[in-house]
Image (cartoon, rainbow, N blue to C red; front, side, top):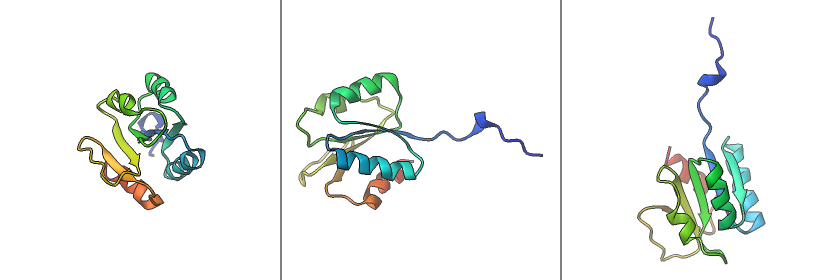
Length: 117
């Protein structure tokens, strides 16, 4: 007989979404939760910094085209976090993090996560 051991279940990846625009933030979270990601979402880099002190995230999604500076937040992210930067800058280039250019589709968003698993 095979017994179910809740301690041996695969871990569910957690995601921190840093997006100031309510509609985009809730859309990203909705797509990811339907794929069984655990999501925390905040609207400011300051709120993100607080969440990062309390939780370890497998992924951090940051909109870098926001009124508040995000460069300090991005540079302070733990090395083990997979960072996805959302931007509407066509000229952006970041060899350390992946860029997701606005507007993006649900499939383009999910491709960022599949690529990193």
